[in-house]
Length: 255
Image 1 (tube, rainbow, N blue to C red):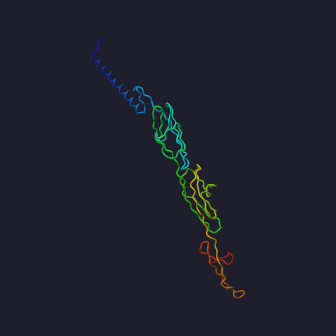
Image 2: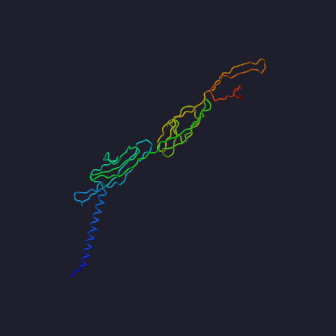
Image 3: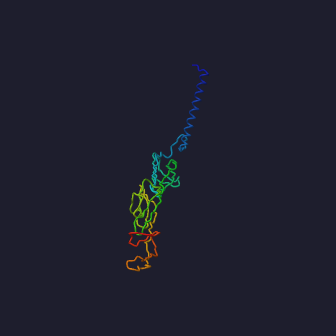
């Protein structure tokens, strides 16, 4: 059988090309393995993956502003040996994949087992804004009456709808308007759908002082049936000036 030089050169060329392609594939595969945090053993052809699969991270955020009730649960599978978890970038480790009692903020999660360490990234525990509000207060008009009012306005923060209290949270009302109140101090606070409460703001409904005066008879009637008597009202205080005066028990008034 005769083999021509051209056929031999073609076979040689194909074999050389196949060798180059195979070498490139092996090199690429090794690079991919090392770039995926795989661990190189004493035999460079034996490569075993480090920490197993992190299936998901469940973050439970905070319901009420200022509380530290957040949770982070790290779920993994396929790990080798003892698995440890960290939510502070590896500063401390725990064998418990669930962390609770957490305040709002960012947590850097890492997981490691006998084969190595994997960084998952940052996760945030959030919280609602604090409940804030303003009040408009209307005073009692006359001493001893019960017609004062408190209106709650400019409400922000919390979650959902609100309930209102004017006694520091002992009783609650769905209305933001309190009326028919006597003079005094009232502790206003709000709560939202999660029962998160605002701080208490004390407001005061005022009332004028009771009107007092001193009547003085300046002149009696000089003749029977006459109309020249005179009464002067002095030392008037209280109420809200200016005053009107009556000498018939309130049936009529004059300035």
